[in-house]
Image 1 (cartoon, helix red, strand yellow):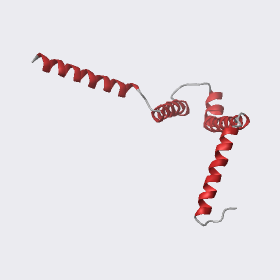
Image 2 (cartoon, one colour):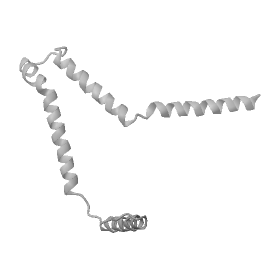
Image 3 (cartoon, rainbow, N blue to C red):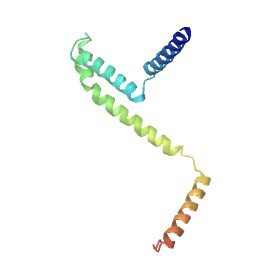
Image 4 (tube, one colour):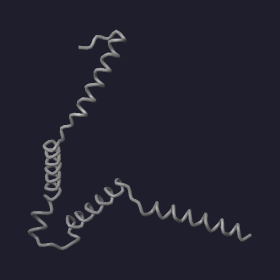
Length: 117
């Protein structure tokens, strides 16, 4: 009987450990959705006048905040794209490997009677 209790205790520890790992780890999608819901709820609290602010901020800044955020995010993405192009590493080994694969494909196609120029 003590062996059965020991086995039951070990299996419950394993299940608890698996459940704790499942609860702790959030996927990237869950993190993104959580952040989007947080930002949206804070914006709605300001936009619906649930949080008292200075009238100048409430009337001039809050209404254009989504557009400003969208333009800023687009600018950030364009910068990241440009930076990636500027810092793109030239890899001669990959070029040689790709040219060899193209030559193999060309020979294979010509063996099958397909003209490749």
